[in-house]
Length: 339
Picture 1 (cartoon, rainbow, N blue to C red):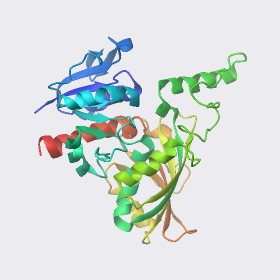
Picture 2 (cartoon, one colour):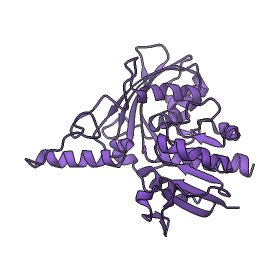
Picture 3 (cartoon, rainbow, N blue to C red):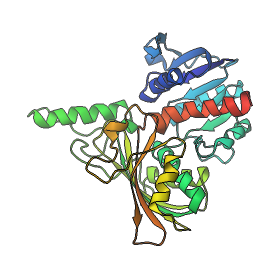
Picture 4 (cartoon, helix red, strand yellow):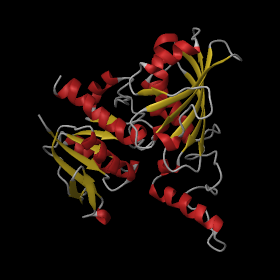
């Protein structure tokens, strides 16, 4: 049995990846629609060997369509997602708009696949933040074994997480440094991103945390366990694609690093590359285009009771966004539509 699937925001980085991944994973598609705003109307996008022309989101009728993968901003999602959901089409939304609504499931299929069944509340399923998605994939199997008490995470997030204009800014600033008179002032980011790191992603809150840091806390509690204490420092780095995270975990029970390594080797969605030698770990450049969440540098933290350190890397346009959305759709088909 095949399904009618719409990709909303098909001309953006994440929307294009959604189309690629739907084809790569042979999702059972009978009919596919690539939707975009009127300014992108008619733009061509690829779906396997096929070329699709984008259709107008504003006038599109979702009646009779099974699943809509949304990859547009929160404001546009606020306008169009309820219309799609009301027509009977299940919305899988990549924006932050619905993530914290108590009656809308926030799903990472390797962690809480059963939550997709709550879609019936409002016909909407939320996709988590990119930095949260890869982290919980790595942490959940360890949590099942030894119960996580506290997490301290520092992220090294690529510019693609801020969109195409952010990628262009890094590229143009990098070129401008080498060509006198062609320097590029920051527009997307608050400071220069080329050859620099910026300890701010999203706006500051009264607590001193940024909203990105708050998202990681709130989403981890909703997806994994509300009892987990987490603190994050989120940093933008001059990398085009691929988010990295240095994660310190404190457990309720002792977990030996060798056992943790074996648990992660068996965990769904995780690939362990952990050799204690130069280059025996994964970097963002190596994860691009891959489905896996990579874990390296697994070692005891002897400064706290029951502590571990690890390094986590993933393609943020894939596992952090498009892949997770497609996996949610696959889980929906398996557990609900055909279950």
